[in-house]
Length: 95
Length: 473
Image 1: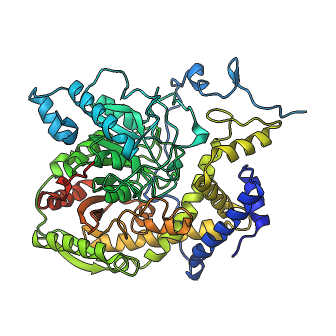
Image 2: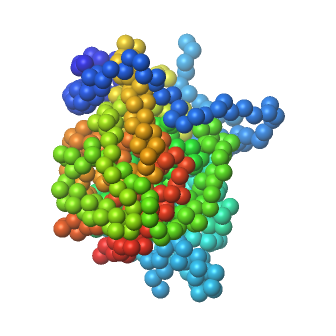
Image 3: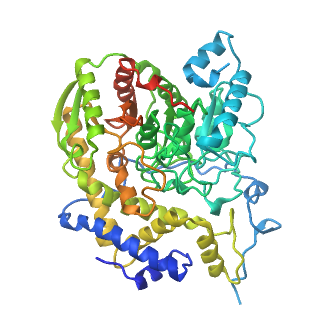
């Protein structure tokens, strides 16, 4: 399967990454090259093989529903690029 | 004094015998870093960071830490522009365990490929680390800073992380010991995630004994990591037994084929002969799905990475680009903040997970991962170990593979399967090429059998002297 420029553009939008024209061109070529290599997998018959969801047997992890200490608000906000009171500030979303 | 030259276990003995103090060790190490790091560049943000953490009170032996392991009060940026200035609000579990063990860590962090994406440490926003054995060569990656620091005696011991070989391959390129524990053995809490089903933290050390010491400190169940496994951890120093008699080792024929440098092949075969002479039993085995490991890895790892890296959007930490709307802010922040390889991997992973391609790529990769795991299960029914070269070549030149991502991916061909199968593996120095570059021997073991790995590695090390040779800087 090959990947064209339009598909890379769509995937970049899904990934929320802006790409310049030159970057788009370069990445399309590289991704096509990598995918051609990955296509090796299509030669294997995997019809009756179960997918690996966990590599080692894992049980569901449960804990008692008891309140525990969490990070103080001040620490949580210490890296905020922009903050106001106890909140992160983001560009306006609602018109 | 040149205390920085010693191993942690030698220094701990000296402290116990009152021949030295933690203060002396730190002051010696500081001088060494100041003396040679301009050449090696194993550490990042040298000017802005305090050397010793968590406070200036030295205690035990300081551990050097990769820049993707969270250290409260000390910047942790994954060597990415997008995490510029990130000061973690908490410590990774491994850091708390180091402190609880009476040791300390350096606030100065080790260089790495951005978000651990790479095999050469060239994808760092701070520029590349140089291999202490040849400054024109890469140290391997992604834990290249940790490996180079240990090799250059700029670190007593260090922590790295391994998603597809990122501890073992740089250990091999720099001539040090690197261990990737079983998936679930060491808590990932506070390790900034790359591929959550593959990532493990592990030690990079000057010898096998230090590897056992550091494993004792960092291993064990952690309620903060739901994939950490609650089974007892043994005292790994008890496995430091110099005896290989009767140990059964498989040699996978798929690893000794075209693409393996003939010089590396000869050196690894010599190491195998050494172990034979020490009583280990060898037999050729087959891991038939080996050729699919790299393609499977570059689907699963990128798919998980694309999801994990969604959190870097300019809202809660790190870089934020100026923009009008919210989506525009995300897109511009991520364009500015991520390097080329990060963008490539996010796009590839998003593609593999997207509607219409999921079954053909992601689901198929998960199925082939099952086949790769079964290959190992089959061999480990009859064998205690598998031995391979760690890397098909010795360290390559800086810049040599930067224009060809696929060529770079293939340099991990011998290390990737281990992460896909979740098993532990160790790389130990086993010789030098004619050009004087180190070569690593990779030993693979059964899940949760790190002790057995350390035993064979220790036996090899005790009967050879490769680990004692130091680079001239």
